[in-house]
Length: 316
Image (cartoon, rainbow, N blue to C red; front, side, top):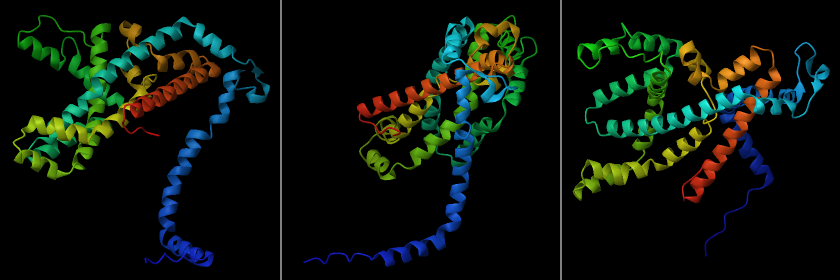
C-alpha cells in the first residue's frame, strides 16, 4: 500500500512560509510597487466620476457644485457634434481594425519563413522602431513624405510618369483618411509582429520536421501548424482590440489636423478636448469618457463570450 503523505503541522507550515519569505521578499517588493502604482493611477481617481452627475465648477468643488443627475448624459447624447464625433470614431476604428489587425499576422508569418537570421533580426528591429516614436516625429516625417509639391512620394510618382499633379495626401479629406489609417498601421504594426513572432517560437519544432518528412511545403506548414499554433494569441489580441473601437488617438489627430479635413478628423478625443476641457465643462468630458469606457468594456466582454462559445480561450 502506498503511504499517505504526512500532513504538515501549523508550526511547520509557518516555518516554511517565513523561510520562503526571507528568500523572496525582495522580489515581492519589486512586484508590489508597479501594482500599487497601477491601483493609484487607475482607481484612485474613480471617486471623481461623480462629477458626471453634477454641474461641476472647479471653483466650487464637489460639495458646492449643483447635482443634476443624468442631465449631462442627456445633453451629450442630444448634441449633433457628439453624433458626428461618434460616427467618425467608429468608422475609423473599424476600418483601422480591418487593416491593422491582419497586417502584423501576415508580416510575422513572412518573417518566420526567412532563412537569414541576421537579415531577420535587422528587419524586426526596423519594424519595431516606429513604436517608440512620438506622434509629432511621425507627423514631421509624414508631412515631409506626402507634401503635394515637394513630398518624396509625389516626386517619385511624377518622375515615374504615374501622376501629373501632386496628390493631396494630407489636405483632402478622403486622401487624408486613407493616409491617416495607413500611417497608424505602420506605427503599430511592429509591436504586434513581435508578439506573434514570440508566439511562433513556442511552437514545437518537431511538428515542422514531421511535416517536412511527410512532404508538406511552406504554405501547408504555415496553414496547418503555424497559424493554429498562434490562434490563442490572435484571439486574445482581437478581444483586446475590440475594446478600443470607441477610442481615438488625440495626439495623432492633432498632429494631422488642418481645416480642410475637419469633417473626418473630428472624433471623440477632439470632441472631449474642445467641448469639455477647453470650455471648462468637465462634467461633459467625463461623461463622454465614461461612456467610451463602458462601451469598450461591453465589447471586450462580448468578444470574450463569443470566443468561448466558439471553443477558444478567452481573457477571463
